[in-house]
Image (cartoon, rainbow, N blue to C red; front, side):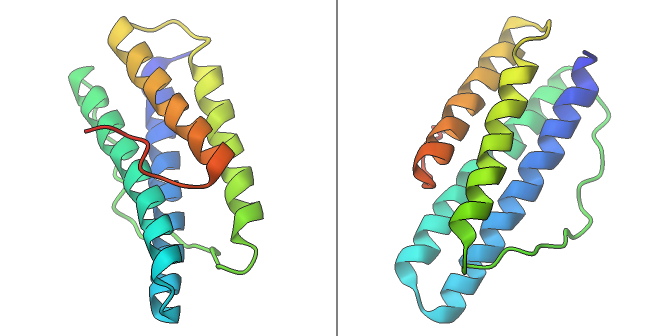
Length: 133
């Protein structure tokens, strides 16, 4: 496994996941559903935190960051969101489990293990605020 491209792929996936939850939060806000808006915003915050942590680690490793500024299309809708989110979160869990099987430095391994722990909580509960600052 080439670590830098694998981390870039994870970073892009986290950005897409953050966008997914932000789209759902916006729909909930539009519906006046404060509880669901808060739930989606907490998930969004966790995923965005992962983007930031992966970005920082890539910079520490001397990587040239891929441009993630392009808007992402989203088919996220509140109707049936749990099924879509469950699939997405299980993919995240699988991604990090697979990444952790490869060779890497201790700092990167610790970061990925921490992200994996959060993603496992997301997959189990479909709720956020599992990351620490």
